[in-house]
Image (tube, rainbow, N blue to C red; front, side):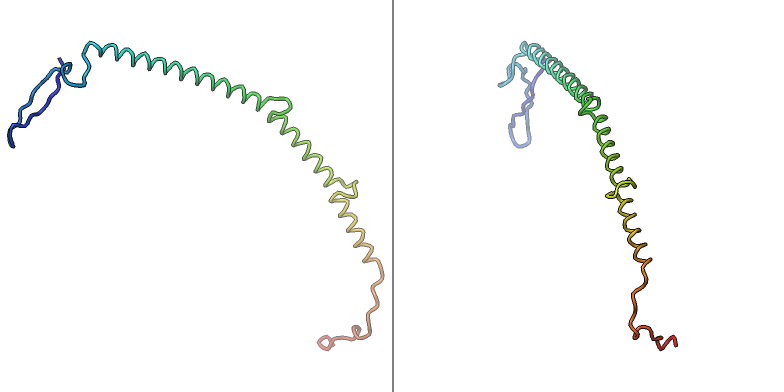
Length: 139
């Protein structure tokens, strides 16, 4: 039989230890109720485990479906988004570097080079006589 221990002081130096059965201690339950309490806790725990397992399985199914849609959807999936981005970059590159278009980088470079070539093919402007003198340090 399980017992509790209590200490009663008889004096300053002496103490008496008394053993009392647990079922007779105040606030304690009778031993006959203990198997029922244990069974109730074990059943509650088993239900909790089953509930958590069902929630985890459900979450796994939801995540799996969302991942599949995210990766493989024909219009909103990662592959479709990357293909759209690639087409956009190709269009931008074509517009920027197409030498046949006057508004592209190469077209503008051709215009700048043509203008520079025309300015160098003209005769130089006439300088004043003051500028035609030889500087004293060269002379």
